[in-house]
Image (cartoon, rainbow over all chains, first blue to last red; front, top):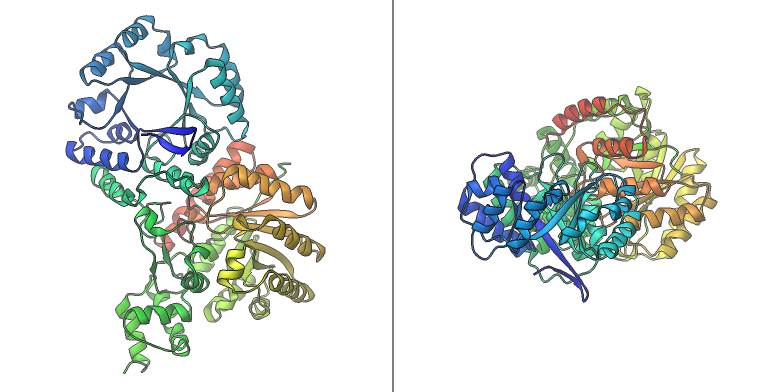
Length: 350
Length: 269
């Protein structure tokens, strides 16, 4: 399918969440994992990268999803053939194994050669790596330290030199993997490799959901994808891994569209675009007004209205201090019933 | 260009604004002490205009004589600034809505109103002898020409530092680099502060990119807490700034990790 950014700009999205989950967990449930993959496919993933460990846990791959296998040995070629996998990822070093390469090619398996890049200068030097001609596609990985935008130009030169597709798989040691993927897409690279939530060993990768939303809103691309299904993917992820997703996780955190502070609440009431980067429903979430220490009088008035009580803004102002005190002493936001109680106790509710 | 970076921690202002967090006076004092002890240049302590306990706490905080400089956040309002002056902070920060979205849809005012009101507020606070910093709220969605005009006015009024706020977290590396560089090129003597939000997971990388373009101050919060998906994460930023540029040499990551653990415990997040 590929992410369609524009007429001549299509980007293949590879997800590598599955082997990362398996590296930290011995058993995964086949059905849940397959549902999870389907969810990811629906929000934009084209290819699922797996490894031999995954094939041992789930030997029978589902139909309708496309997998690529990380090949580490000759035995893995047999696994590719047996599971009808047509594309693989191998390290640059393995490109030197003539027999392995010949067997992959004889079996019609496409090769993505992975090269670790730590410094900008290494991209330029890659032109000296003749072996890369054996690959069908070149993947640059690592890349955590590429802070200068010059990496894009050098990567484009590399693509022209080898006349091959270029894929990137940045690591996230310095919290810039999402930014690197976005830069790659903005500048016409062919493919990105990411993981859901950026999940993975050694600081993880670019977060699939962040990249998708960034592309959609910053490049104003009509991706023709239903990102409102992301919360379901998040639920499956939690179910498979047992990992709690923080409420403020970008894009999929359940609380990212909660609002409370007086200035924000007032502005969001006038027009949500003032303090929201995009419409919550786009990612399957909704905004919620919470009442607590930072609430203002208009927010309290609105909350009471939601609870079926019509009050004047002056009356809402009268109970503001009680709300703040209660919230501070409880160290949390107030429940609807508590807001009503305060209003009732103040003698305003008849 | 990369001379140094100073961290402005806003855990006690933008961080506390995250729904679900409600700190008591003593907890805020403890957090401020910890932030100061790990080498934070400036602590954005809160919003005096909230009144009551908030003002009491900031006054008490000032009496501690912490190493960090203490600033307070203000809407563009003389009444707010009067509340701040009551607290005798080191710095008065005035937030100036700069995008038409904020000027028209939030304030239902005009650009001229913004200009005039900002001038009055700067005048008022400076006249009382306070250092003033200006925050360009929603700068990333603003008309660059109007933004430059406002910066020019602030510079002419001897404001030394401008905060570029990506209020809804829609910046990306190339864009923030170009924006900061353009401001630096036009206003050579102005100091710039970056305030990034993490809505697209890029708050840390946008902040490091701003540094590269010449920003000297970076706003952070402990654990990256803040409105929506939060702000630039203190520890992650320091880790990146050390590794990439060799900056933040005065900050010990082990101490930050320890403080982060204690502060997140207090915040209960």
